[in-house]
Amino acid sequence: MNYLFEALFLMIFIFLALCVQSNRTAVRSILIGVLVVYLFMYDYVNYYLGVISGTEIIIYKLGVEFILLSALFKMFFSRKISRPSFKYLMIVSLIVLISAIFGLVGGATAKSVYTDFRDIFSSIFLAILLVITSKNPEAELSVFIKVFFVMATINGVVAVHEYITYTGNYESLWRYQSLLDSKLRVNDSYNTGQLIYQIVRDDNLRASGFLISALIASYVYGFFLVKIICDIIILKKKNNMMFNIFYFLLYLLFSYVTMVRTGVLMVVIAFVIILIFKLISSDKLRKISAIIFSLSLVSLLFLYLSSDFEFSKDASSQGRLLQYVTFFNDFTPLGRGLGSYPGAFDSYYIYTLLELGIGAIIFIFVLISLATSVAKNDEAVSNQMNKRLRLCVLVQLAIFLFVCSFQHIAGSVYYTLLILYIVYNSKLKYKTSVS
Image (cartoon, rainbow, N blue to C red):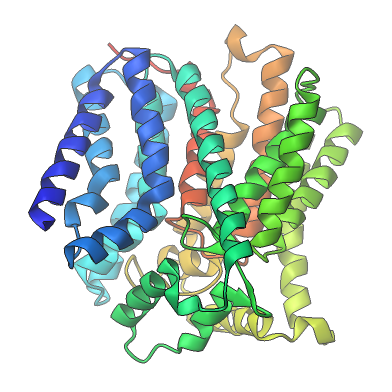
């Protein structure tokens, strides 16, 4: 049975790799749509493939690699790449090279180095290469958002059904078994009590649908809650007001059944940032203020975890505080290399700073640069609507930077799709030159 699955997914991924080579908008749109569905369903399908076949289907896990390599070949053979694209690719490649060497020299296995590379960096390479090899990135962006929205909505409906029908038997949930297997592979003495807390809180299921984590599901819903707010307030889309209000309330329900507060917190942060934008007229000051506000929230979170307030002393908060203590004890400017802390820490910042050192800061600045970039001397980005669109991207980025402070989101569907969203909205789409 496993050979049949291996052959099936090999054919699918070869087809997607061939779609990358096409310059036809329809074919590339199929590629983007299938990619989003694959990322959304990755863990769910992977688990049930293992149940059915009795073993891991290795080829299934390599879908992104097939697309990435195909896009890389297309870029090289086209012999045309813009200066901004080349700059970003070289910066990230240099960070990967140095951190991989440090990791291997420090004793990390090749598998753990590759796992961390895949989690942290494959998304940015994938996004940049897809954009610069596209003839019509605007159309692909539209397909990306629509399919992303459909998948998030379907996932939310499934999660609500899970929440309503939950009987209290968490061991029967697919993600309990999947998470337990993955944790035990890394640590055979893993405390299952920590896992139960991820799935159940106060006897209520933290429903996540097809996604393996309720936290990640909450961030996905938060992304669309913020997008709806931006559509109404920044982009001033009034035609579909009732549609937007309906889906805003629906996504609040989706966020509720995750039992995670972050989705609602993302909405509050979005309103505050948009208010700041209303008070400031300068585009440059808006960018600076959004980033400063986000980093200020990170500082406030650390102070909260360090405080003596009773509500900051729950197990989750104290566990995160201890991880910051570990960070200050183990941090080195150049990092300990990829593979040094695979899957460790709740905070993306702790995880990447300990592995990459200042490379993690440079990588964050690459994302900020892409999100705030403006194509010079290009009428396509000089109109008012595109200026507003960049503000929407900036709001999403600022919230993403805050989420990174308390959640290990590297490699998650939220992380990958957010980076794709940023890059597809960046100046790279206006600087594309493909033969």
